[in-house]
Every structure is written in structure tokens, then in C-alpha cells.
Image (cartoon, rainbow, N blue to C red; front, side, top):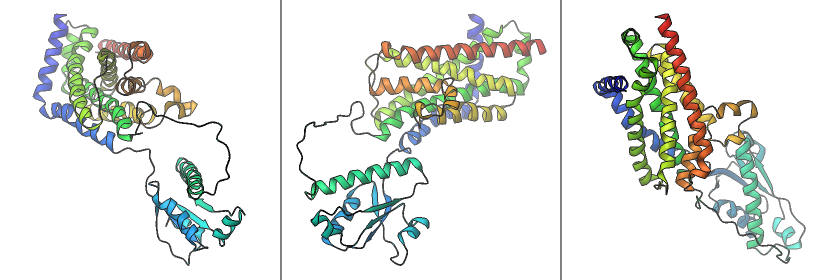
Amino acid sequence: MKKILAQANKEWMQLRRDRLLLALGVLMPLVLLFLYGTSQSLQLRNVPVAAYDYDNSVLSRAYIETYGAAITFRLVPHDPQKSPESTLLYGDARAVLIIPANFDRDVRRGSHPRVQLLIDGTDANTGTVLKNMARSLNASFLKKNNLTQPSPVLVRLEPRLWFNPGLSNAIYFGTGALAMVLALFPALLGALSVAREYELGNIIQAYASSLSGFQWIVGKSIPYIILGFVELVICFALGMLIFDYHIPTDPSVLLVATFFYLVAGIFYGMLFGNATGTQSAAIQGVQMGAFLLALLLSGYLFPVRNIPDSFRWISYTLPATHYIVVVRNCLLRDAEWNIMLRPITALAVLSAIFFALNMLQVRKMQFKG
């Protein structure tokens, strides 16, 4: 134990001397937490729509204003000499609303006039959302103008939203951003600490000393685990101000999950430091292997169930995938141990696997040395 603490103290002294790296590990997470939590949005707003009104009646203008009043759409002017198809083709609007002639008359007669909405389907998700929103606006217009056929209401649906009643993107992404911040910096610091030993030649001294591989790995990781918890406290305080974080009823769930998450991230970064031997290559490896994969495949941006089967297995090998589940459930649902046991167990297993891989790397290097 004394050797582990001595190695940890040596690592802490090196970290204290490198004030730029220390500031990077403490201050940059705050910036990234704010950016990742506030700059992402799944809601469509102000999609430009051009309206071609070939009826020019009071009712047709009221129909167009239904789109103008919705936050999803924004009415934009268009060149009347251009056809609706050209307006869409040249990107003047993302959608084109076409109201036929005699719209008012046909509505009054019950002739079921057809209003056309041309939607730019380049982005499949956006196109689907706009199509569904158009149907909703059409139903709202008919109801507002008493144009629906009376029918008895046999079943009345009353949806209620739990955990995030306002459907706030800031709350959803703000909780996930905590996992993204802790995915990058502990892994990066762990990788740099090992790569620096190779660049300075100090790794030979470690091999020649009486330190075992276990003691060397654990001793190097302890300062960064402590620094990771400091990052957690600072980011959590910022999250309470911006993203309505609240302290869970049982904080031990989040703390234990964070411990295994930090351990897994640091050991994962040390793998890159051992494999590359240079700080520049270690940084690139962590950016690709720890951060980019976590950003795309962890469930931060897209639900894991929506990821293609051929890539989904990668998601479950990422610590961020399981930690995001814990963070969002603890901060939004106030989940307890009986619910969070599976993802925490997965984090513990991944930590053990990354530690074992580090042991194999260190032993191989010792034999080579």
C-alpha cells in the first residue's frame, strides 16, 4: 500500500507542476458541459415554409396563418413567378404549402378540397416530423373553424409527461453532457500521464524499481480519480444552476457509478498511452476511441435502440453508454439501486477488463525492457 501511495504522490506532484494540464482538467469541463448541454436540440423551430394561395379568400389566409402561428414553421416570402417545385428545389423554403383555387367554396360545400404540402425530404427525420406536424395543424384548423363532423367521443385521451414535463432539451442534453465531459478528460489525463513517462524515459526507472505492474497502474490512477470527482462536484454545481440538477434521494448510486466510470475512463486512456508512447498520438487515440465513439454511440445524441444492429454491440462496450443511463435516471427519475444495478455492474466489469488489459501491456513492456 505504501508503494501505491508513493506512486500516487509522485503523480500528483507532476500534475501540480503542470498547471496548464491541471487547469485543463478542472476548467474545460465547465465550458464543455455548458456547450453540450445548451447547444443541442431535437426540436424543430422556424422551418421556412412558402405558401402559394390560389384562392385568396379569408378562409385560405386563415389556413396559412395556422402555419405562421406554429413555432415549428416560419412563413417566408417567395417569388410568385417561380413554381412551387422550383421554390423547393432552389432552397428558398424547406416546405411549400399549396392551397387550390375555390378552397373556401369547396370547404363550405363539403367537397373535401385537397391542400398540398411539399416537404424537403433530404433529412428523413425532419421530413417525418414536418409531415406529422402538418397533419396536426390541419386537424387544429378544422376543429377551430367547426369543420369537423360531429361524432360522440367514446374515449378521451389525456397524456401526461413525467420526469421532464416541459420536454426541455436543455435538461435532456444537460444530464447527458455530464457523462460526455467525464468521458473525455479523465481518459485524456490518464493517457497523457503514461505517454509522458515514455517520452521522458522515466518508464525504464519504473520497470527497474520494485513496483509491480498492479502498484504502478493503481498509483498512477489515484490522483486522476480524485480529480475526476472534483470535476463531478464543479460540473454538478453548474448543472444545478443551468440544467436543474438535483441531488438524488440516494446519492450513493451516482457516486458509485461515477467511481467505476472514472476508473474505466482512466484505464481506457492509459491503454492508449501505453500503446502509443507519445502524447500527441495518445491525444488523438483518446479523441477517437473515447470521445467520438461516446458522442455517437453512447445514447447521448440518439437512443441506443435506434443504432443499427451492426454497430450497437460497440455501444455496450463503451462506459459512457451505461453511465448516461445512470445519470439520467438518477437526476430525472430519482432512481435507486434496484433499478440501476445492471448499468453499474456493467461499469464495474468494463473497469476490470480495462485494468486487465493494462496489466498485460505493462508486463509485455517489462519483458521487452
